[in-house]
Image (cartoon, rainbow, N blue to C red):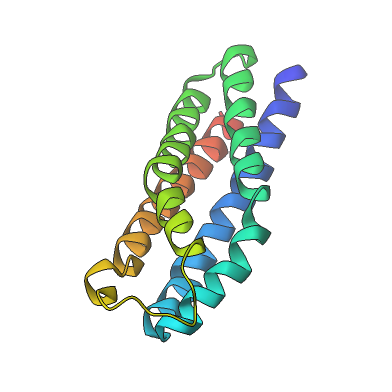
Amino acid sequence: MGYQIAALLALVCGGIAAGDMFCTTVGLAPMMQVLSYRRYVEMVQYLQPRYDPAMPIINAVALLANVVAAITAPSGAWFVVAAVLVASVIAVSVAKAVPINRFVLKLDPAAEPPDWPSRDPRARWKAWNTARTVLMAAALLADGIAVLY
């Protein structure tokens, strides 16, 4: 019975995270690509405090729930797969997305740097967010398989 609560938490948190990342990948990231420097910086500065600390907490709970389910479930192999995938999402977030977000948060929307075209992080951020989306969707799929078997 105990692993079922962990499995439920893994599914709920993984679903929230995958859904959020999917919406960002198909909606927000493409929109950010076409915004002016000023509007892009303003948008990131508006959205980022709303995503933090929620998304790191949701991802951490998904990871912890998968680890607990992997240890306590009668057959935890798929939960192990999901845990590795969620850990990969967290690693990409910390190593790639967070530094880009911190860079943009420090920018002045009213003062575009003269070298902005060479420093513009939007394409890199979009690529890393797409990678996180695929990883989290795969983790959610692994959780679904784990629950079925």
